[in-house]
Every structure is written in C-alpha cells, then in structure tokens.
Length: 223
Image (tube, rainbow, N blue to C red; front, side):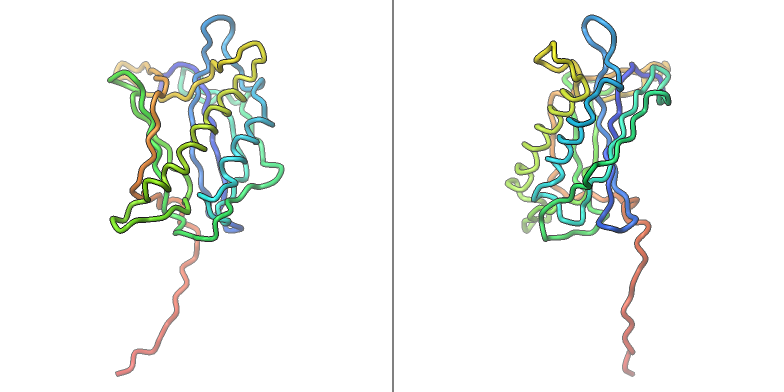
C-alpha cells in the first residue's frame, strides 16, 4: 500500500489481568505547510499518555478495561513502518475505567471517521474496547450514553494531535486525524477527518475473546 507519509498511533490494553488484548488505531497526518515533516521522535510521550489516560479512566469503561501501552509508528510512502523511529511506551500506571457494570469482551464500540471529499479515504473506523454504556429497549446504547463518550473522545483526539506535533511555535496543531486509502493505480491518499460518528449498535470483535477458556457447569439430566 502506497500512501502519503503519516503516523499510526496504536492504543493497546487488556481486560483485567486476563490475556485478552484489545487494540485500536488512530492515524494522524504528518505533513506541514512549510518546513520539514513532523517526526515521531518529537512527539511528547508525557502528553500522549496523559490524553489516553484521561479518556480511558472514566465511567464509560468498566474497571476490567485496562489501558497498558501505546505505540507510535511512522508510515512511509511505501506503506511500511519506519522501524528506526517506532516508539513503544508502556503506561507508567495502567489505567482502568471506573464503571462496575461489565459486558462481554467481544463487544466493541464502532467509531466512524468521515472526510469532506467523496472518494478514496473519505471513511475510516476504529473499534473502542468494551464500553459500559446503558442500553435501551431497541438493543442500542442510549443517545445520552453515546454522547457521554463522544465529547471526551473528541478532546482526546485534539490533545493527541497537539502532543504528536509538540511544536511550541504554533497554537494550532498541524497533526490532524486522517483516513488513509490505497488507489487502484498503486498510489494512496489521505483525507483529514471532519466528522466523527459514535455507533449506537454494539459491535462485535471476536478477536478480543479468543484466549478466555470456556467454563461450563454440568447438571445431571433426570430421566
């Protein structure tokens, strides 16, 4: 996949002390209007960790949804990771949600990203780990519950962009949330995300429930 140079932020954690892992990724543009491109080495690890910790340590995640590390990759125009600049940063203190209501590990919240222009890279998506949100009688998360996660998510994205840019000379971040797409000719494109949609229907990520051993309680069937 050939795309313009950009960053991929991989956010990773576990469900409690279990081996079940959750992960989601956010892409940020790295090109600036003048001067050299942004570099992963200049990103503020402290500020990235703080933005993620604030978002994940809230009541829309349960106490068994634990943020453990993040990884920042530079994606080159070849579509490959620049190995020499990748950063893997464990959280100094793993951050868990605060809710006491739980849901199956395979339940995920789909977040859709939309660019302004029709065509390649207009749409993108990530899947947040199991949220602890109220469900109405239609099987959907309530509008109020989704709205409670929308504002903190938008704030986190803005703070992450500022942390990745980490440039004290500008007040507006040049690093922006983006979608990436490969074109049929072998080249790719990025689009800046202009709207974010939080899905109300619980989604399923079966890969987040593939290590938990099944436990059954057997009962004798009386003839």
